[in-house]
Length: 89
Image (tube, rainbow, N blue to C red; front, side, top):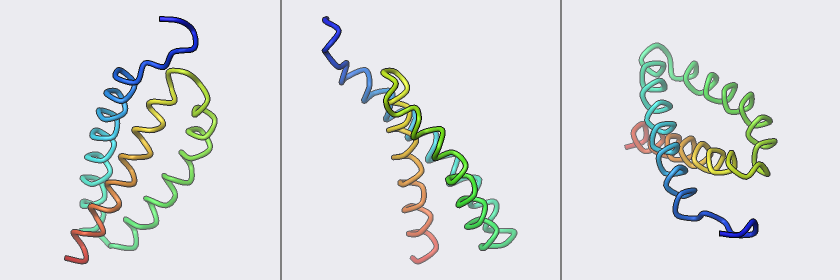
């Protein structure tokens, strides 16, 4: 393996795992907050995403951490879509 090659299999495996853990955590915590008040869940999700975004943006060019960034972004997006589908449906 040379310095130019990208470990796609390992990286995508890490990304899928991080997405699953992040998505499950966001859904579970948000469902608990929705029981208190729906606007509280929306507000805290927005604050958490806004606070985490600058850190993730800085990590996206680091060789190993970029896979965690991909997984975290996919997990949060998937969780938000899941929560939206659960509340609308």
